[in-house]
Image (cartoon, rainbow, N blue to C red; front, side):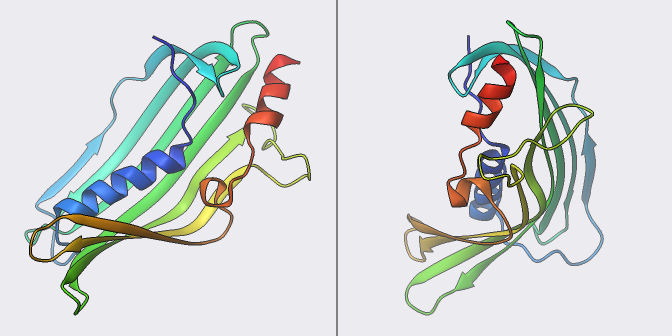
Length: 189
């Protein structure tokens, strides 16, 4: 089964939103759950940006903490090494973030919010052991800084209403940066 590259920032944002929707957070007191996850690397065939066939090798290290109130702090380091079948060239995608979620917050209008803040390196594309790939205008292809997701729910029914997103710093997904054109050009050359 082939897969398309999905920016890690989208995965991180989804994980943060799911955590926000399931727990009231604000981390106080010692952790009741304090676990580090280091599963074996996942190796599978895939397609980079729907254009280049190759193999993904994904590695995850996660430090998950939860206190007695259900507050969560989740530190995650993700790396994905894609190697093109035709050229043998590789691109390393990496992310290293700390995610904290708080809520429910009464908005005073019949809704509640869960706020998820993701800090750190949300996503970077680079040549292994080499430079960060750049866009056509010379900007590094990376996301870093603070990404905040506010998930809003109906307080009475729990029905999802919307997600508000804000960011400080460069964020590929939020800014619509084209990482496929330069990365495919590199992999095919």
